Length: 225
Length: 373
Ligand code: HEM
Ligand code: SF4
Image (cartoon, rainbow over all chains, first blue to last red; front, side):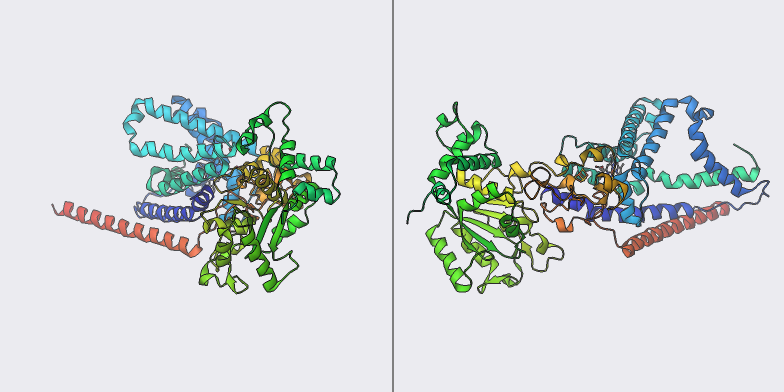
């Protein structure tokens, strides 16, 4: 087996299997959460629930990231808040606004979009890698986090870290031939896709639920958090 | 009949000594002869390598003493494109010299003779030059139906290949088809096409993949064999390292635009007119090992990427099935079937509902038991 064949395998059949497992797994998780059910709401609402939801999303995605100092999570541990935030920003830029990954979406969805110049994506990837290292070190030494961290948490970090690093090495043609690094990148991406529904990385889907539910509660009580 | 040396023959054609030495220099350059190691590798006296040694003179010495290299050229599932590229090559010096330095004993497209006459000539040559001739194969070999998909003179390609390979000193597989199966091997590969090196394992086989093979690379390999009596150094896919050691991307003239993230998005947009990188238009340059970007085509005139077309990756195994030619490299090779994805989603949802319902039932039962207490 040569690298061309390994690459064809990791870009082809293995990717498809991983994607199918990902879809099935995420739907399973989603249905499980939905079936936990809602409490019947017997209290009359003071304000509009829908407005609360919209406000909650706007604040969470568009306002707080730019004025983080109003939040206690930030003032208590700014480095970690920043690392976490930058990591997610980096993920968004690399996976949505990077040319290579836009082409992945395009092949799956049938349409593409505008992308950022490679050097910017590249710097954001580097930022993401540094942020992950910071989060890793924090996990190693923070006494509270240490208690909460088991093998699954370490694996979460590793499974996200590997595609990032291999992708970065790939674009920079570091150490290995392009198709070797490409195969490794794809292999780690395939593993990540399979791992996500099994792990807490699936939070990216539940984030939207929790924001909606909180917003609805706030809206109902006409309070502005 | 003792054949004239190559130099003698060239002289008879009116090539002057001065021109001859120039040609020798060109050959030495083509096969990468410049310093000491190749001289030692050749087994020639080391004194040659001392002061005053010139690679050109070594080539001249060989061409002055050796007679022409007999070549038998077989065509199987091919389009004769490699032959076309070679015979119409625009590098008159090098290609001409090498074509003068070999005697093509059998070639279906080029030979004047046909039918039994041509087959007879081939057999004579195979006997006369047993163990000395170079076998060139163009086109893939079909294995299905006992080789019935490609027969010449009533015999299968497989049969002919095995017979001709037995007496060959070395085998050159020219083009992606002979090397890796090429177009005939594209899915679903109805003829079960194979490359030469998958079939002949007891002879040195050099692959010169490409669609077609670059004529200068072919001639350089022949020249190397002529001068050293052996094939050049090969990579893991049996391709000569000198020419397949770097990717197209490594040497691409559009590379600065790739680094700057400037991509053409269609064939007639601003980017295309400015000569930006073709990665988003499906360029396979980063994973393709070949010499197009440095040697170029038509005597160094241009090559596909220079002319505005992304690299198709034609020197790599299975390039025909390596994803859409006009689809970016990072895109997965194929989209999973929508029904499969739908079925997977449904399976996930059903499993979720089942487990969720079981949990709810358990909770209810627990509550009842609690109340009953
Ligand atoms: C969630 C998973 C993924 C992560 C975290 C990830 C991460 C990265 C990173 C950080 C880079 C380097 C970007 C740069 O420096 O410019 C990269 C490049 C790349 N990624 Fe991914 N990637 C992921 C998924 C994928 C997928 C699914 C594919 C393809 C099917 C893919 C294909 C590529 C390719 C081809 C490059 C190289 C781009 C180039 O050479 O210009 N990645 N990836
Ligand atoms: S055109 Fe192709 S080979 Fe050239 S720099 Fe762009 S991706 Fe690389």
